[in-house]
Each structure stands twice: as C-alpha cells, then as structure tokens.
Length: 186
Image (cartoon, rainbow, N blue to C red; front, top):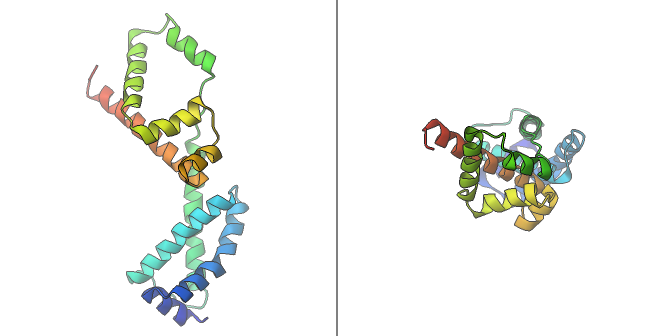
C-alpha cells in the first residue's frame, strides 16, 4: 500500500487502511520497548497511544507524510517519546514503603512531636476521603502487598494503567495533604 493510500485511508478512517498501518508498524515499536525495559503490555499501551495520536494529527491536518516511510517513522517517534517519558516518570517516582513494624513503632513512638502526629492524622483523614477506587488500589499495593499485575487484573486494567493510576492516586493524596497544610487548617 503506497503512502498516498495510507494517508487518504487515515484521513477518511478506512478500516482496512487503519488495520494495515496498525499491524505493519507494531512489531518495530514492540521490539524497541521490549529492548528498553518494557513488557508486551507496555508496548501495546504505548503503541495504541502513538497510533491514535498519529491518526488524530492526520485528521486535524497537523501531519502530512512527505515520503514512503513518514507514517511509520512518525508512529515510531511518538511511541519512542512516550516510552521515554514513562521510563523517566517511573525512574523519578519510585517509592518504597517502610516495613510494618517500623511504621507501627513510629506511630506509637512517644518521640513523635505534636506536629508529626498532626501530619499523620491529616494523612489518615485525607486517605479516607480519597474515594473508593484510589483507596482500594493503594490498600492492595501498600497493605496487602499485591503486585501491579494482580491489581491490574482485579480492575481489568493493563499493568501500565495500574501503575499510572497508583501514581495519580498518590499525587492526589499528596496534594490534599499539602493543600490542608498550606491553608493552615489544623
């Protein structure tokens, strides 16, 4: 299929052309992601986002292929950038939880000042007001020690979606705690 047929097919959302482009460009992206610390699920998620971005950009006249490999190259470049963003995010956002006995010792410790105890109370209060999906996700990860794969299966998500949702829930909790502290609310 030549480049003009591909471009026209994308523009009019021709199912056969969309399938051709989708199937023919996936292996290269999958190979790249698997070779750079990713999983097959990661590759599928990233590729789908990249494919949709290219399709949308063609529909909005923000991209017009200039040669025979332009569409394949554009899909690959978007997927590569998205994967690198995800790797940077995971690398910089890694968290570890304290072992339960240390956490309990800290909470029961008389050495904790009033400010620290107030902070712990704020975190507990805001955690309770997070909402069921976030609270359940964080409970499963931090308290039940379930893997991302198990959590993803429970919610019918991909593993990458589970990681992203966990990150968003933690960010929401942090923001709620920070906002309460910044506003001087006891």
